[in-house]
Amino acid sequence: MTEGNRGDDEGPASEGDSGGDGHPWSNWAVTLATLLGPTTFIGALLLYFGFAFTDAQYAHFGVDAATLGFSTQDYALRSASALYVPAGVALTVALVAVLVYYAARALGARGGRLPAGGRFAPYLLSACGVVLFVLGMLGGLGAWDAGAMDTPLLLGGGLVLVVYGRALFFKLNGADYPVARERLALTLVAALVGLSSFWAVHAYAKQHGDDEARYLARRLWLRPAVTVDTAERLHFPPRQARETVLPVADHPQRFRYRYEGLRLLAEVNGRMFLIPENWSEQGGSVLVIPADDRVRVAFRVG
Image (tube, rainbow, N blue to C red; front, side, top):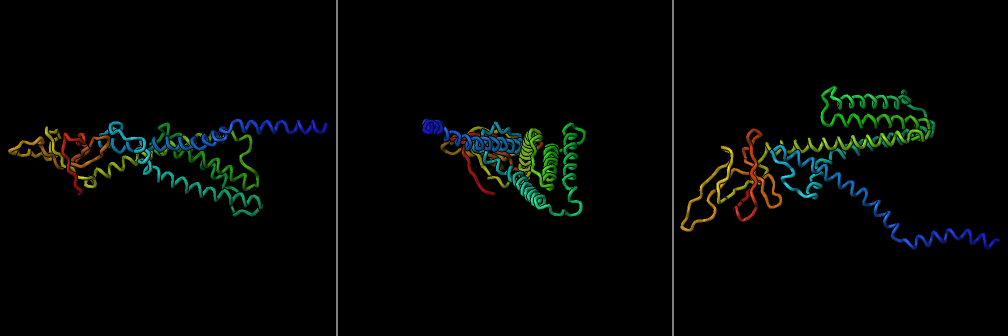
């Protein structure tokens, strides 16, 4: 009986061991999925915000981002400037919130005496969160003139304050949070906060792209100056480029026209997007020419 019991006890363990040996790839698959899941998601976010930033930047000059034909790597790299400020602000706020949370937990565990009015701090935070959330809802419904980032920030920030005040209330009383009955609600709150954050960062990326375009439009001398020689006459609106007819030598050359007063806006996929130095939003144009032997191009700084 004793041997039989031992055999029964050892049976499942041996089967589990053999099963693990029979599928050595299973653990690797789980590990790979754990690594690739967040990486793919973050990569998709970088691509999306990079496109939003680029689209707003070049739309100011009348150029659609799809016309430029940037690669996914280009969009991911361009997303960096649009994410520095949102990421820095979010991490700073999270750090302060964590420090306050741990201080409240320590006070609750020790049963320490709180400063005057300290017990009302969680209620005040939650009340402020409700007010912000209502303002965000009204802004989204058009009841007041909310900016592109105001509505998502008010909605997400209000929900965070409500939950944070609730968590502080429990910790100041030495209790654990979240309680089981609130986990479903917290899941929904987390989804709404994530959606609001995505919305706010997208709005910031668009605004940042437009701000960068306006800055560049006032300082086009920051872009390389371009002189273009062509065989055929190019069309520019009046007084937006200086055209010179090249003299005909004893041995006629292929290039007959020279254009100056241009700046390089972008060069992508064998095409150059040229913008006049005196470009303006009213009547300004961007010329697209091939970067090949059909034109002769000279660059200079300043």
